[in-house]
Image (cartoon, rainbow, N blue to C red; front, side, top):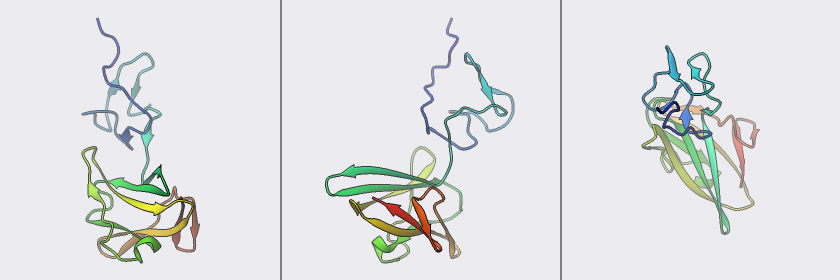
Length: 141
């Protein structure tokens, strides 16, 4: 008799508020493993947004900007000094995991300023950025 869930929960594998594949964010126990967890006791691998993922390459760093698929609603662009602050150049696209993302190749060892621009001229920052300079988020590669 199998007593453990067949699902593997890896760090950062679920969006904030989700309790696993097909599990609602509220109500009842979602997993009955050795320690168990529920809506009141979520797993430690809860992912918060926005997210920056960096992949070092030769002479450059690929930075992936990730947001939830529906927050904020409508199209969202990453706008910064790396694209001359042109909206629409790097628009986040939907992914299969329920998020949306765009990857930008930036020179290694640099520092860039950026912000997100959503529909309705709604500007917002990356809270997990390397720093902030006035109204802009800062990113070190």
